[in-house]
Length: 345
Length: 284
Image 1: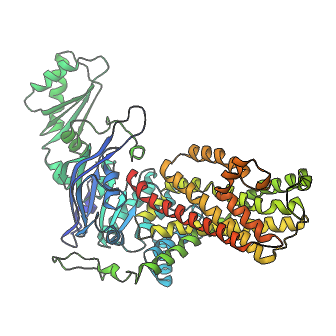
Image 2: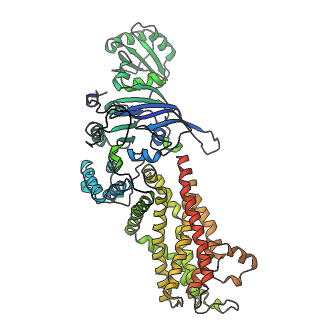
Image 3: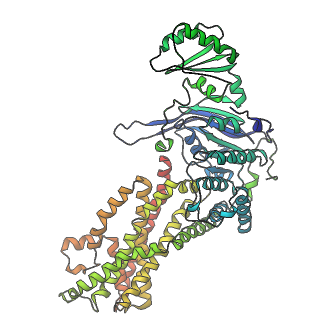
């Protein structure tokens, strides 16, 4: 896991609370034979300070998008309160809408208009004057490397270009708070890195508050100043990426056993080793922590070999958000069933 | 954004945006309607073929029916003067307006799927302006198609004693009836969000509504029960208003009544479709 050197050095430029949400509950009625309502949010509470990038990390279906929809006035919660810059989202959605920029998961740009026309319309809807909005559109087109495609219909854009235009659309009116719902999903690695740089710049140079959702550990680690891990509609852990990782002393040791291996015996062996703690078992994968992972591995392997339990793979890793996730939710990130959040929302 | 450096004080404000605060709601609604209509019309202009494709069906009705049934005008009690083609024209215009706009909900669903509607709903865009733009767009396309149908009729030998004023009334009636069905289709699209539902509803209603109007035959030739239904059929109001306005002698009171009825119904339907945003947002 690469070190988050870029973000952690950036000092917060403003103080105070930009976003406050408390006890958000949202249940969706589902249609179908076994119609059981889905509880997307179950008392979610977050507080986001001004001028930082705040990440909501969690798997699909954890409630990240629903949180964004409520905070951006699109959906109403069944219970709970939310304020943007002190303005009640439920009572004054009109005022909130003027302060926020929203980049949703789905594009939202008009495919039958050019990139520039999309930006200009968006600016007009926020009450910007003609010359002002044209200048702003040109500025954003240049900044997001779309100047060459400014007068082409959006339906001819590549996925990466459309995503950059989406972000530009969220910025036209110079919002104070920007919501980014999975900004890099579906982008190739190169486009993703470029998007990360741009997002860093938004909070750094532009002093914007950014609330970002992601299901990429690496993205959260790279971008977020503060992070909330969301699982089943609530926040299970919160802090800076370093704080969260710091809660986990030492290194993570991951073992993988072959099919048919005696997992129970392996577990009891590891539990009796002195320098190994926090053992967790997910299927045939065993994870534990050790103050010095590299020197612990030979002892672990030797102990397992003595009892006749074979091992297919062993990895030692510095604490990652993956481990944080595992610790707080009790299950590995990758093993989370991926259900499409859009389908229930 | 250098101007935006609020002191670390007690009152969180949005100073950067205060300068954009509109002076009053009506002018904001009008401005938003203007910009959003511009967006829609731009898209239409980029696909002019769609207007032409939409005309294929009415033209077939016009010339096939006009030729095939040209002698029905001799039936006792038909009560029309001139050619059957001239009789058909107001019916085809109204029918075209209804058929074309019945599919508006498909477009609404496309905008939902793409996320465009959500983008507007979380912006200060006025809800009414979003629907106004739909209304204005369909008014423009319906008018273009109406003018083309009237001209084709003229070329085919139909004459319009009502003149330009009569033609304008035909246009207004077609816009209104188009609005009624366009708004209903939008409402269904936002509520049900299934293309099949719109297709099903349209197929179910299209022909009955057409044949329960005086588009092809005068109501006087219909059985009594049909006449009763036709009286309540908004498509029939548009057909009748247009036909009266194009005739030699026009009963303006009857035309006014039918246009008024269409206008009232269109206002109700558009209002319902604006209110649908609320229930759409509940399901988001």
